[in-house]
Length: 116
Length: 113
Image 1 (cartoon, each protein chain N blue to C red):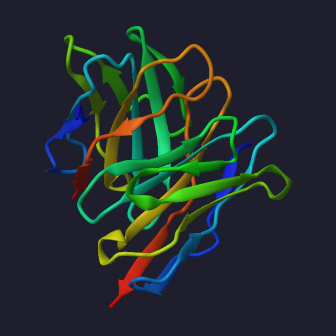
Image 2: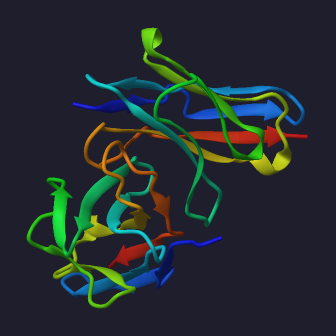
Image 3: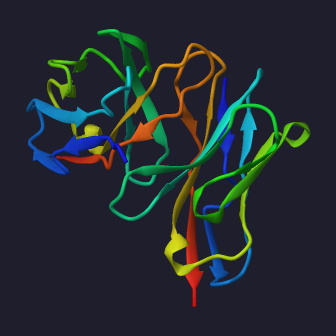
């Protein structure tokens, strides 16, 4: 069964450093997403991406964040200058991009980001 | 604004007992509803979804959920719980157009033998 994969599974970084989280969505999917889950809190939507551009983003997704589809298989989330409060589990998801209705989103296993 | 409430943070049931996890949503239009499960160290796995039609939805692993518009609820049920069902369960709602999922806080299920 196709699945979303994410690397690395755990990333530790120093405050102020740049990190790139990587995701390989399901191959025939056209919509890509990032969510995050701070420890003990809800899973929160960050951004959705379709046709090589951001389709929707939350207020969390400020100028420190960017997403990219650098090639035909990868989807990345970059945090330019990490803060302590960026420590969270980051989930990538993908969906088929139906014409109407909320797509079923398939999630990866997550990357746990720890900012020291 | 959309919101999802899962009133139970933790639930403990005995193996073989029935289970019901509660989910209430707030949404002005037609909701699209999902239940996901997260086992320790794993990602979010889709259990089932409701888009339209029959209000009783069957999912994987023997789970089902019933959409009740009058109560704004989408409760998850299983007739007989197995120890492997111990995990955290998330209810989520999505809009009719667009793809931003809004999640509840989750319910941690513990299964005792």
